[in-house]
Length: 129
Image 1 (cartoon, rainbow, N blue to C red):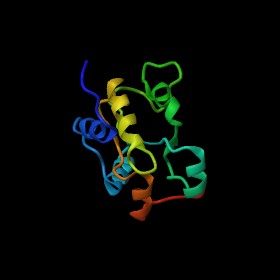
Image 2: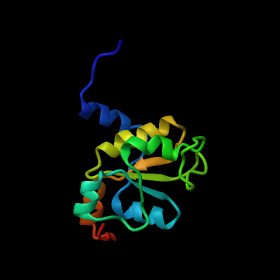
Image 3: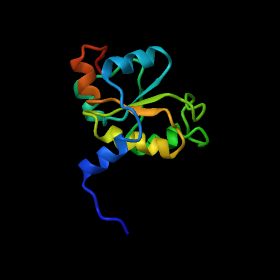
Image 4: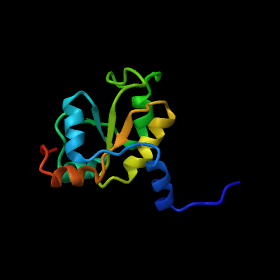
């Protein structure tokens, strides 16, 4: 059995396995066809707004909705080569979510550094919920 780790160390280890993406680069990736996936809970979406074009998937449904082999997948979940950018509120839960997508074989999955709050602070498009 391995020694327990704290959440900060776990996040650091997971983030070493892929390249995270900054808000402006995420916007460019979206314009190039990447799927933006907003996993924030409803109260945050209602409070802060939505990213136009992002797909809202509650965190507890993420793997089922993005697994290209799953019976409950989104229409956009067409293959394991899909470029996915997971967005949470501040960029912590999205790291765990991106790592989970990697475990499903979605090797191009990443998450947004700083989350929705960084997107909004960068002046990128946001619409009311």
